[in-house]
Length: 225
Image (cartoon, rainbow, N blue to C red; front, side, top):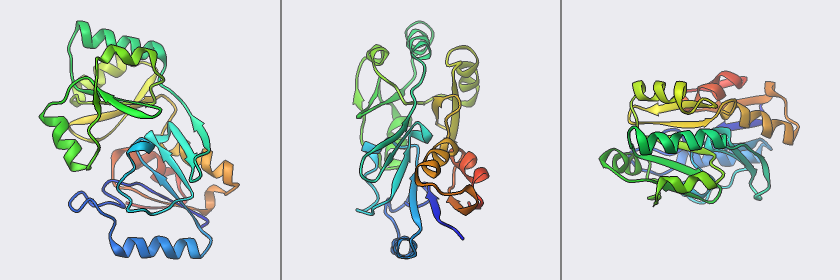
């Protein structure tokens, strides 16, 4: 019997075209809760940018691809940051080698060094709040939970091998990749929530549509793509 269902947001619960949750989905979520089944969010978004669920309530949230997990009441269950030495290496790369648009998710906000057409396209695609533009070097003194680097796959590979060596990428769009601490993923978040709520993995179901959902989909007992 299923006792916990995990949902990605963008492209899964929320349409890229309408930026809304369909009424049929709202009804399905209501029925799950009536049956006593826990419903969880599992997203690459930071919690402060989950603004597209039309007031729907969930029991808990996996955010930033597993790097920051909290209950519906706001209790933080798990958080894990990118190593400080990797952030320093990235700042050095941006200053000395090549500057590219890069968002950084810190605990209560998202900042970016600059915005170009690729960034504008993604912000519009997922109806994401415009991040604060700031000097990239300022993130050296922050706890960074996730980076969103607007680079192609070739440069991504170079960064992971030579700059962000303590991190792992998770790409769901050709224009950018999410970068998180190595060992984190939506699967990590699943395990943290299941432990907190004392639910077995054999009683899970997951829904997702992108590359960053793969660890979660592979981990759940029943998966829907």
